[in-house]
Image 1 (cartoon, rainbow, N blue to C red):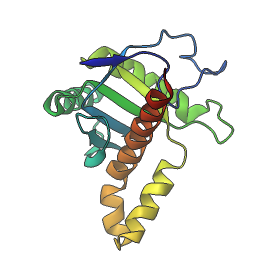
Image 2 (image 1 turned 90 degrees about the vertical axis):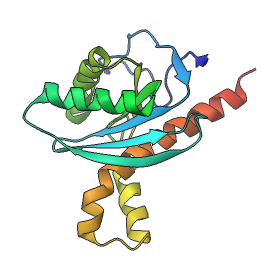
Image 3 (image 1 turned 30 degrees about the vertical axis):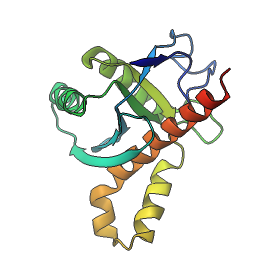
Length: 173
């Protein structure tokens, strides 16, 4: 297994980010899971073992049982054979951490405790807009888009992270 160290793509140091002083995890290169954490739904995407391609997987409806939601996510990570989980971080347009990003960072901390693999964040600005646009271009009506947009957004997030990592590795000496 190849391991790459360094700040995850899209997770730039920012003085107002609560995780800015967090040690950088060692992130393996291999199968991955991407998450788009919403208030009502969680979009899930899966990345291939080569670290090149992400595909939408499923949309989980949130339950009142947050621990049960964490157990469902842990099962997905194990079933996928994931070596890393990438969570979309909804930064403000100016790149700062607003209320939505702080809520996601709180949940990322719970995920880091519950999951057996590293959990990293990636800037998710415009991922849902991109997901809606691609689904509209594919001819899906509003109702059909609503059912899958969160999984497609998770795939956009994960693909962005994979692409940025690959570009960083290509530039490395």
